[in-house]
Amino acid sequence: MDRRTFSKTLAGATLAAAANPLSPTPVSASDQTITETPFKVSIMLWTVFNKLPFEERLEKVAEAGYHAVQLVGETSTWTDNEFRQYNKKREELGIKFDTCAGLRHGVGDPSAREAFLEDVRAQLQVMEKIECPSLIVMSGNVVPELSPQVQHDSCVEGLKRAAELVNGKGINLLLENIDLEENPHYYLWSVPEAFKIIEEVDRPNVKFLYDFYHAQISGGNLITHLQKNVEKVGLIHIADVPGRHEPGTGEIDYLNIYKKFGELNYNRYIAMEFHPSGDPVKILSHARLEALRAAQG
Image (tube, rainbow, N blue to C red; front, side):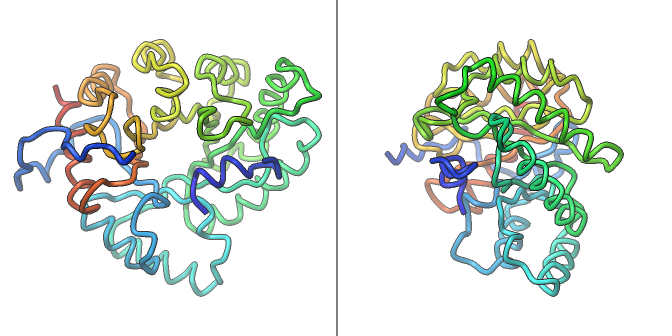
């Protein structure tokens, strides 16, 4: 399952860009030692290496210099033996599964509240097996018979209830925005509303997954929203607009954004969630190093 399909089917509802590198500067061997930035860099695995067996996908991630991977439902078909096998492989490669997604229900529909919480309970068992500390939560789609305020309040209450389930387990819940071009039915497209929800939930283990690709399509103003709310952000997803390719292929000034991460001392994950326009290993490696170098000023 990819992220586009997942966002459209949640809760039972519902250009290739120019291949210009973010910087023409070649990556040198010494760049591999950059470690002084506050944030960590991961890969949303659904975007790359999809035709390879899972263990080979992890090898490609490691080849690109990454030590963290985010999953969307891949574990749903794993046997007990595969859980052991893939955990062993990621440990050999020095990779952790830092975030996962794939809940069938969202928090925006109060009638689906108990089903959503049951999804969370089931996912916690999986997260324990793969030692994953963060879970992506979606709002789900607009419910036509409900007012926006009712759905807003449902997001708040659903996240509070889920926070109670994960309390003391070292798990973070991450509420994500999706733009209306990708899913015209999705409820939580507004970044300001997302931050308002996180503020009202007021739980240390509930944060916003600030997806810059979706946010740019939905209105932009990426840095301003980040500056005002950086403490509410638990994860950032990276892709350029249009086309969902690597930074430097579109309209988002990621070099300036990465610099801002450093200035704000953003110390959580960013995740590359783009379709590489060329060789995936080379482009992913370049994207990671550019982010780290730019954040250092």
